[in-house]
Image 1 (cartoon, rainbow, N blue to C red):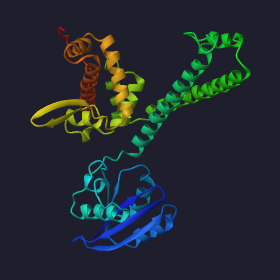
Image 2: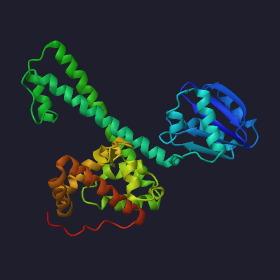
Image 3: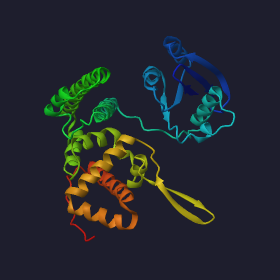
Image 4: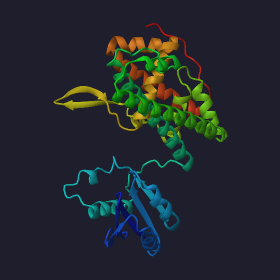
Length: 340
């Protein structure tokens, strides 16, 4: 059996092949555009296993070598510390280290979403990308009209936009404003199309996936956007052994620093999906406003930790509840409110 470590970059890949005793058999480098040469190389290896770090852009390579390999492993880049912290870092050394870890069966593996989960994530993240663009453009529009004391609460309603015709804008600002408003209209049309695509995607779900949507939407404060983000970003919740593990995955776990016997609590780690963290905090605010139980939890935490830490703590608890519901398939039942 041969063990192949692959150091993948945007323009090139470096491949190191070792045997069971971790002796280097060969090292090769290919440009990523040389797809036929890459496939021919792997096809000529005989029985092999391969490992590549789960960085952006690995999917095309896996699709081509998986039919040829006994096994392909995705390495968790955050846990492959020996590579990240190497003082003699090079593509050849990184590929060799990956190959040696694979030969020893010591590769810390990353989660690999299914093709459907990848599609779901792509749609959900694209919707968020459009939402950010929309927000940025609206801010810029308000900056322009504020210079003319013409900003108003309903600026982006039909009446608000019509009011801009009477504002004595300079020729340059009129031109800029027209372009930004045209961009906004385009983004809003695209956002509506993404929403339709996501609903069509959900309509084609398996029964288990559809049940997941139902149980998430049964929670107070969890709407369509939150449910889609949680499903897309967490993937298969069965891979998490505990609530603590899923909280760490979302980057909501509080950091700690210990020195000279003293422990200092830090902010959250912010590892993992920023979209998942954002949507959980937003859902937590909705739950606090609409649910007596969650309001009681937040109020008690706020007295001890302050409002910002309290809402993050609520988000941690809410995520634990959501994952538990996805595991059980049972809809949410609101606990009795506790006294603050």
